[in-house]
Length: 125
Image (tube, rainbow, N blue to C red; front, side):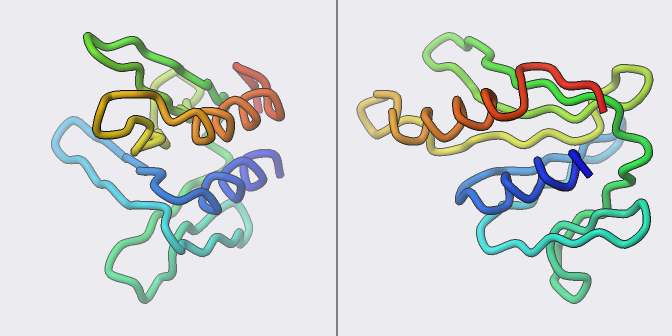
């Protein structure tokens, strides 16, 4: 239930970029106007009839990390979903965190901080 709650909070925020990556491909989907539902152990982000949507097996996600990663000019903000091996299976990046002058968007950062506070910086599921 916790996984569905976190993902539900994320899809309500505009400009979240969900990324699923394997060794041979990457899939990206923006959060804007996505629906979310759970049926048995599968959480569907987006609509099955849309050109892009995600299916997340809630039984295989074992941990969540809120990450602030310093880059050369900016810091990236993400929520990472990990499997039992600690491998990242899904990540939700907060995009549009900076304005055209490279200043951090403080109201947007507050949204990230509030989610981090609500769920904890690292949460085992």
